[in-house]
Structures are given as C-alpha cells and as structure tokens.
Image (cartoon, rainbow, N blue to C red; front, side, top):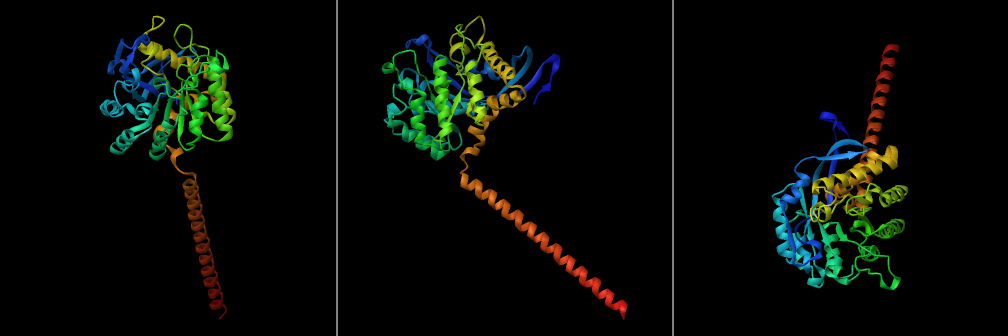
Length: 380
C-alpha cells in the first residue's frame, strides 16, 4: 500500500533481496585480486530508504530483509570450508538483524557428504533460512549425485535451495555447457519435488538463456514435477553494465506465469555487491544508485505492462513471494494436514450448527408444551 510522504515522495512497500553476498571475491576474474565486501558495501543498500523513480515519479523503498551467503565458500574453489565459512556468515547475521543466512554448500569438496551442513543446521535451529549451491564455481554439474544429500537435508529441514544458473546457447549443440543449466537443475529438482529450488539469474547471459530458463520453469509447472522458482538478478541487462529500462524477458515471464496463476515463482534479487553494485561501478553511478535504478526499472516496466495487476505483482515479486518461501513457509505444510485442518474445521462448524439446531428445537418444544398447558388451565 502506498502512503504519501514528504516533498512529493511516496513510501511504497518493503523489499526482500533474495540474493546478496558477503565476503571475498576476485575482481575482474583475477584470482590474485581478492576484494573483501564487508558491512560498508552492504549497508549502502539497507541503512536508509532507497530513492527510486517509477514511471517518472519519485518514491522511497525500504529493504527489510536480505538473504545472504558467504562468498568465501565459493571463490577460488572455496577459501573457507563449509563449517568456518557458514559460522562466519551466521555471526554476521546475528549482529545484523536485516540479514538472514543461506548455508553455502560445497558438494564437490565433500564428495556429497553433507555432514557439516547437517550439524550446522541441527546446532543452529532456524538460523539458516536456505541453502546456496554454485555448480559453476566448483565445475560440478547440478545433475551430479553429490548434490542429492544436500537436497535431502533441505527436505528434512524445510529449506529452499538457491542455485546459481547459467547457460550459453550461442554455440553448437554439442558444445553447450550444462554444468549450471536450468535443465540440469530441473533434473535434480525433480528428484526432490517437495524442495523449492530457485534458479538464480534465470539462466544468466542473454535473452536466449533467459528464454531457456523460462521454458524449463513453465515445463515444471505444467507437469507439476518440481517446485522450481527463478530470481531475476542480472536479467535484461544493458551493454553498459547497468539495468536496462527494457525488460522483455521479465515481462514475458510474468505474462506466462500469470496465465498459470503462478506468479509466486518469481523473486527479486540482485547478486549485490557484485557487478555494478560494488565490484565494478558503471555509468558514473555509485553502487547504491545502480541498485536504485534496478528497482525503478523493474517496477516501471511492470506498471507499464500490467495495469490494475501491477501493484499486486510488484508486492509479490519484491516482498511477498520471498517472505512466504523463506519465512512463512506455507508450502512446507503437507497437503493432507492442510486438508485435515479444513476437515476438522468443517466438522467443528457442523457440530456447532447441529448443537444450535437441537438447542433451538428443544426450546421450541418446551415453549409449545408450556403454551399447551396454559391453554388447558384456561379451559378448566
């Protein structure tokens, strides 16, 4: 809901960024040039309201929650292991209430032995809100059996799994690299149909890559064979390294999901502070300004294309979908339990109704007898 603020600004809903990072990363793909993205980089986005322009009008948005993982578990094959890297991430989140940890997983290094992650989840109940997996960084296809123990943990602890996804279709079919492809991720997700699996970056790359991810997502929904989602970080990006005002892939995605009543499958995310959000500033914009432009571009396109549905879609994509998936978790309630709850509710309602009917009948009978006795007394 929009509330008018000072000086013509309007305060719109809240934002959950479902894909951010903390830790070290190699700038310009140089393993020797590691940059530490600390609190200062992240606070640039969350410490104060964002100044966003939507259809030419200024408004302010607040980032309420951030889902975050430790880059140290992924960079250069992992400069920290699952235990040290995730404990460090947890310490950071415990002292920063807007941040919620995704447990970074290293199936290639553990050879699928997810003991460390299991211990962390068991020793820190409710502290990790999901798992993060990055097939590309470990050069291990998402179809590899080493991922399965991690998905088993996700199923046991009711946790969504965020997968880096990418595919380059601008090559010959035999040379297509499917390590992090949407298709490979889907094949894994089908083995665990109760686990929400998010394809980060919606296939990354160009429009062909995004279309491939959309096709895989729609196929999964039509066949109801898995719980696939996408986040829209780095989708519809400009040649200048900044968010493009044109969002054809995002518009098509929303239209197709709307036909299926499945717009809950889209999450807003940025991958900050990587790219223009801190790693390499672009177009003369600060990392914060690049973030504000990204939010504004997406919201503007939704407003331009979806009429009366726009506000509801914006609320879902930027907040509600992630809030349900990672925090409220109605998806984790077994359907039979939900049905039982409904049945119990109906049974209770019917019992109360029957009791009221019986009470009413009893009252009427007593009233009739009382009236009949009165008539007899008068006759005498």
